[in-house]
Length: 133
Image (cartoon, rainbow, N blue to C red; front, side, top):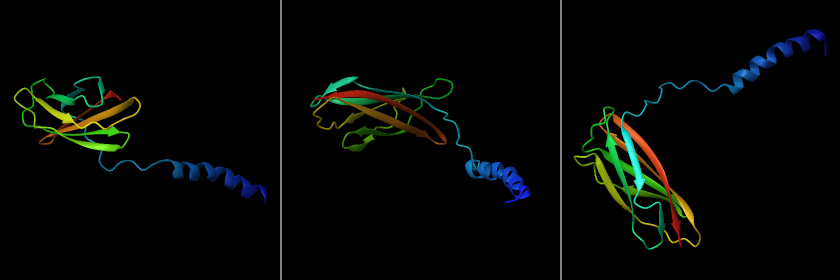
C-alpha cells in the first residue's frame, strides 16, 4: 500500500462510519400528549384471590375533566400481557376497570399502562402494583 492510498482511506473512513451510524430523521415527529392522565391501582399490594381494579382521571391542558374519552389499557403478568376494558370517562373525567389477576407462587410486580384518546387529543400513564400468593 502506498502513502496516498492510506491517506485517502484515513480521510474517507470517518465519513463512511458516520453515514452508517446516524439514523435517518423521522419523517413526521410524534405529537406530544395533550391530555393529562392519572392512573392508579386500587391497592398497591394485593393477594391472589382479592379483587383489584384500576382507575383513571383524565383532564385537558386547562385541568377540565374530559368526558367520553376512550381508555385502552394493558398490564404485564408473568404469563403475558392482558388487555383491560375501561368504561369511557364520566362527567368527572373518571373511568374504572376490574383486573383479572393470575395465580402466582412468588411475589410479582405487575406493570399497568393506559392510553387515552378523545378526538385528536391523547395521553398516557403507567403504574405498578405488587401481587402476592
